[in-house]
Amino acid sequence: MRIIAGSYKGYTLKVPNSLKTRPTTDRARETIFNILNNYVDEYTELEVLDIFAGSGALGLEALSRGASTATFIEIDHDAINKIYDNINHLKVDDLCKVLRLDGRRLPAAYKKFNLIFMDAPYNKELTEKALKELVEKEWIAPNSLIVIEVSANENFSLPPSFIFLNERRIGLAQVYLARFLLLQ
Image 1 (cartoon, rainbow, N blue to C red):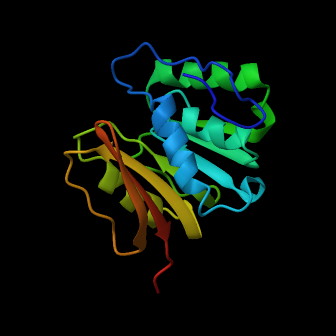
Image 2: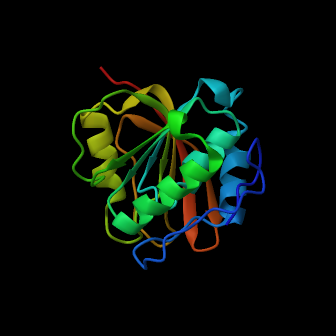
Image 3: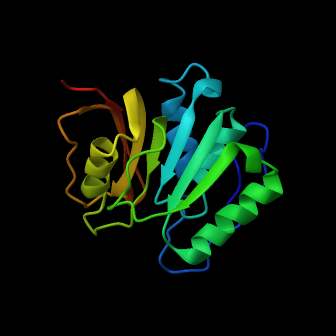
């Protein structure tokens, strides 16, 4: 796995050895960012949240393309160590925060994010629970973009505060791009 574009293009990412994680492939990340480029003018204004982060590849790719900060939420110890390894190698410690949290049980947000990547373990019904937590605990800024990766055979629906913008099948994954609308 490597970073596809931007300042850190070509950097090989360290990935967890654990069977608990399933890193997003280079091809899938390239497709995700190609879709995002249709909705994002400048990455420099983006505060990124990478939940169920694994190696941190999606958040680090966004940083490579100019995002201002990235916060990684992960519960697996090995994955967290790899995220730190990748952050340290890229020398982006000052732009990153790593939180050891369960995406299904989040505390109140310390800030709001405007680009969220969510790639929960497949077929465990975690995505909808985590989305609900992000909204209820106010982790998502109004008008934010969220990229959601689920198994192509997983039943999934967005809460009412989101609208679908795009979707794509990539191998065994279904990737959705949605926008968060603050409903009164």
